[in-house]
Amino acid sequence: MLATLEENQTARMSQVRPVVACLDCVTKSYGTVTALREVNFRLEGGELVAVLGPNGAGKTTMIRILLGLAHATSGRARLFGSDPENRAARKRVGAMLQVGKVPETLLVREHIDLFSSYYPHPLPMAETMAIAGVTDIANKKFGDLSGGQRQRVLFALAICGDPDLLFLDEPTVGLDVEARRMLWAEIRKMISRGKTVLLTTHYLEEADALADRVVVINRGSVIAEGAPAEIKRQTAGRRIRCVTSLDLATVRRFAGVVDVRQDRAALEIRATEAEPVIRELLARDERLSGLEVSSAGLEDAFLALTRGDDNVNNHSEVA
Amino acid sequence: MGTIATPLMNSAVRRPMAGTLAIYLKEAKYEFLKLLRIPMYTASVLLFPLMFYILFGLAFGKQQIDGVRQSAYLLATYGTFGVMGASLFGTGAAMAAERGLGWIQVKRASPMPPFAYFTAKIAVSIGFSAIVVLLLTLLGFLFGGVHMSPLAVIKLIGTLVAGCIPFCALGLVIGYFAGPNSAPATINLIYLPMSFCSGLWIPYLFLPKFVQQIAQAMPSYHLSQLALGVVGAGRHESSLWHWGVMLAFTLLCLAAARIGFRRDEGKLYG
Image (tube, rainbow over all chains, first blue to last red; front, side, top):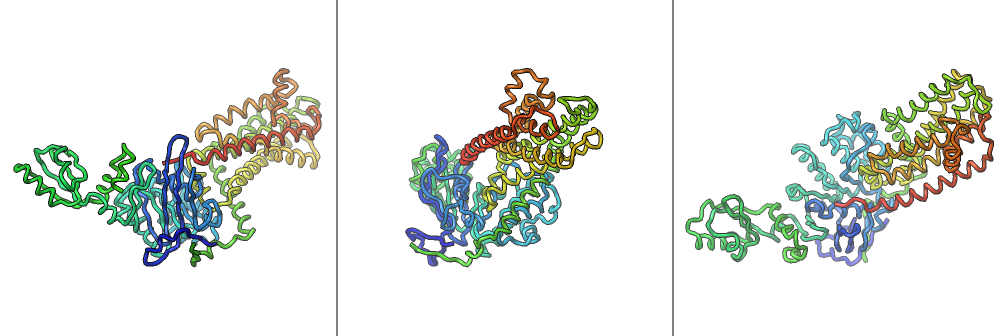
């Protein structure tokens, strides 16, 4: 099967990697609700991309369209160069979706056995179970598992076919810290074996820890895209905290200030650069106290990016 | 335009027919195990028809209805009742639950051949139908004094099991239009009145006139008449007519299920 690539814009990368999945100007409406708005997205072979956004941002819709579970209202989705519903393409894909309930009376190994049979070259059962960490619960009924164990079984079903491309829709929801780290390690191993991974998350730490590239979406639109470090650079770089008599409105007008929030007695300021803002603060308020400066995490970047929730047009300013 | 060939391509090699068949069989096997391990399913599908048959068919078996022993008459009608239950619950309730709770999405996203899912549901409905009918026949022969030629037994079982198809089709409709939790109740609301109106509990000839008229539109009436014909009772109408009505009912249900199938796309978002 051959994948074709229109407008090879990605050639700017040092090495051209195949586009394994893409969305071309995809809009998806459900009645009057627009879940995705003219989204362009490209996933290259060997990449680990995190789609980041609050609940209802359109992350799951994106995955559903790429998997052929939903059709774009306009625009086009491609999976390995063909229609996402093409079975040849699907044989190269594994997906871990958010699911309410799984048939509870089948054993873990029976679920894995069934899903393995769908693929032309599945991993040996023992290997699938070892990777997903379900070996010790292989003979348990799905209904008897804890939340974390269930997530691991769903992960096993996603990887059992040894897919080239893995979709993970909020894979670590409900996992404890240890289980989450374990899953991250396995996801990294997939990448080191040349696989491609698309994951959605609202754990910002997760995107930061795993992804080569982060796509931030909110209210159905891509509002920022780049390496985690780039995303941070695009928005407020530093966080300043202090107790001051200056009011919010005054501080907000300082050059370089992106956002100001009242946090109990203190003000929390996000700014592109800390020094000019601090100079200004100290000049205007001699009794300023409790000064702290830290670098903004991805969390702050994310908050800054999605801040314009009430006004969609704001996005063009920050993205 | 650039053309990309990756070493990953060989994994998309076409699967031989044998592989596809293996998927269908495995899907059906696990569907069967899944239902067998749900006590609610096995109780409603296997135990109710058997219990009713023991209470009404065997306890009063010596009486005559419509020219045959009551135990033979009720073997045909409870056989129909059993087939209906197995098919409606096996197809409809299972599908509604999996659709409503997102599991069907996981299956659809996988490379599973789409028809394997439906085929498994129908195969399992046929399997449970056959089990119910076999057990009822066994009870009838051992304790009900039912006598039939081996050929008639085969014909009875064959007719009843083939008759599960319209109910599987109705099950698909329920699977697509009922909620995951309301599906069993919906099925009971359709299945129990339908059984009554078709004369599966009280023989057709004892039903009020207007109920007899309603029965003409029920696939369960037509199936039970075919089964009754085999045991030497019933109204001896044309078999072709009975099969024709059941076929029409099946096609109608499949058309409705198709609407549900298409509507299903684009339901969830987030």
